[in-house]
Image (cartoon, rainbow, N blue to C red; front, side, top):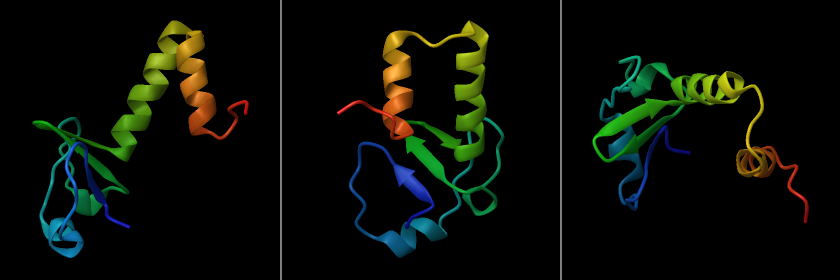
Length: 81
């Protein structure tokens, strides 16, 4: 499984893409030092910074909105079928 995930673009060369260094726009660590890296248009975020951001957004409001809770439940496999 690739360490760098590009959003909005299809992957064609799995091995070559993983060899290129990609830096997190937030902590500036390269993809070789993090679990996963997500690339967006002009911005990258590593899995650790993404988790920090999610925790901040949820804890800052103390309780997620109903829509945010549905997304979290779906992510963690708790969605009602």
